[in-house]
Length: 291
DNA sequence: GGCCTGC
DNA sequence: GCAGGCCAACGCGGG
DNA sequence: CCCGCG
Ligand SMILES: [Mn+2]
Ligand SMILES: [Mn+2]
Image (cartoon, rainbow, N blue to C red; front, side, top):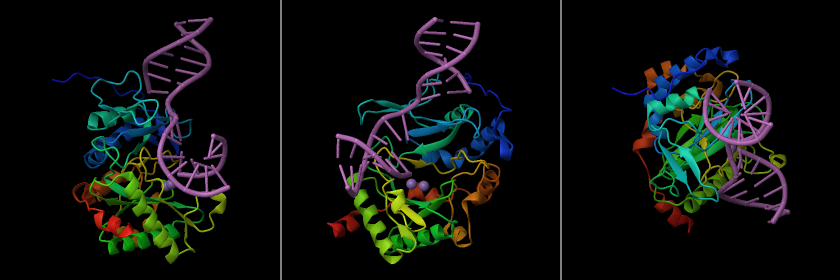
């Protein structure tokens, strides 16, 4: 016998009015994806973006565990800066559903886990469209995939859930962020030489004169990206969707993947990022070459 | 969404 | 009792 | 040191 530590509240509230998604529908989504989503969240501090009145209303970031959180929710206190932060860890379905009920709509997570906060489990390139449609972002993604392949590194794409794409590269968590940053920069500077017409690495928005910003600096300690399967605060309830490279070749675009259609997709295809959790490559050879 | 504070 | 506030700031790089 | 950026 278990004790109910929280209850569903406001089940009929429309969180995505334009997509006709109520809170109860959202909680059903989280329950449906929990099997594939939870392994990616495990032991990773979460930053939430909450929309208590739906995605058309105001939002706020939440890092610290809120007052009144059930005792069953695991937390992790990060002391890496002045003020300690007590983060939520989403390590079970009950916590995921509790967060959903709190109108936590976006789940952003670290590249490292609490085990080794300074040693990421994956690299990630964040491809942000500067203008235009998704096509140049697709092209840049294949360029990065092929470059990584040449270095012996398999990579896995996912939509950001908004306009962009992210490419994940699982690694052995034995390289400090100071080292992984060098690999990220090396690859970014390599691909911009191949296609300066498509790629910009400029951090100043006004200096970006190509259609795809390859944001390699997002990969850093205490920075985050949306978790696989995290919804986004968009009108249509799009989610960050793991893809196969084949789907991207066939023209997948971010707007294809929503809270309403992901459950069926997962039943059919499973977790297309499952290999991220079971495979990892060392960066020793590349780092040796760079030094 | 819900706790906490101050009146 | 109830209205209103609060809920994140940090890593990086360039000037 | 400050600032822009995410
Ligand atoms: Mn992005
Ligand atoms: Mn970015």
